[in-house]
Image (cartoon, rainbow, N blue to C red; front, side, top):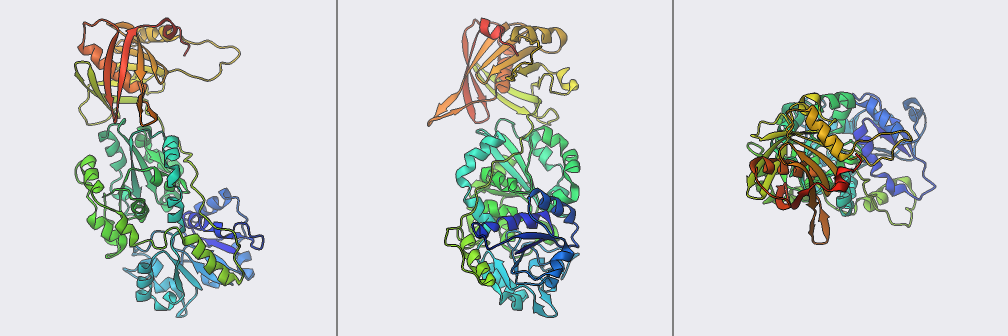
Length: 539
């Protein structure tokens, strides 16, 4: 069997199909790269990462294959010898590309690509929904005669991974924050092309301890731009904690982990809708969006990101997105079984007797950067302190700057009112020296005259804080315990809250218990005179 690919995105879709052949020693799978795509270099790299057996295009042309599987009708696929199957490489047919094929027609429905000498060259079009079959019948009835509605293997993999949602959020460090995922297709009408500053803009407005922001880019955008240039362009947002999903599997795990999506006209948002995620529209795709498509219907109904995101999210949560996904995905949970029947029919073989199920998505491997500096807004009301943290360049009104020493930029460590350091747990080298928490906090106040509070974060529940007026104090942070779960706030946020309270409370007597509101969590914090064990703690 030959898997013919033109792009990394098409390869990733086809990899979701391959479980239909598992356990069958009669099937040998080979991959080939179809020439002529602007994204073929990244497709070749993706093939190499998959550890698949490949053969060159000329070699693929020279032999007859028992089955040819592809996820795009473009390219010289018609010259390959053997039964040919075309899978969609997205959630239906929602876009048209003016520079390719017939104007105003999605390439997946375009007779220019589906016919050779007036006849369909594919033996099977495996579609996800009857609506796609109706549209294919309208635009290319000859190809529609060879189509079957089997469902969407990628969607079934997402649905089959829902039980792993907590594991994905744990790997991403989401905690109790709301994970908002931006989804952007590729090309000049994509969200990132039209609103390139949106990730940084949202990060500057959303409190860090209440929200986490992710970004899913179309694989073609990864291919066109490259990882190096993407990292350069998104550097400020990545430094503020943006999660940039990798284009294979990780994007899907991010959708499962998400609480809501902000999208353009790319079909990724339809997968989010199938998971029941609220959808906010940020750009409608201009002339690329096909009127009457499921994506167009969803964007017409979705709240728009015109003012603040929290208001748009509240409006989106009041609407059921699954009905739009139901117009794009049929046979949910059945795709691999139905597809296996169709493929083995073309192979003229009896399918294996074992059940076929989608593989759960792996946990995300991308670890978002932990911001090293924050602009902090606090509100002190008696012994209760509310704290919100933003990137240092935020336009929000804030009270002080807090930075991690020495990870933050020098300009931030030199101007921060609060400096903190996290204890390292690595085993010491044979020859080593270490600061104690007492020694490091005293040194920082000596070397940084603008710093008012130095804090050594010893554990998630213990800190040593040295304040210029109040002196050294031990902080004991009680975790939240609810419904059998333990929830912890970032100690660095609690340190900023304590700093604000000390600044507004010149006279007090320890011990004292404060209440700190940070994001969705409320924690109790006990301040006592510095404990000897905390003072001597090695950092």
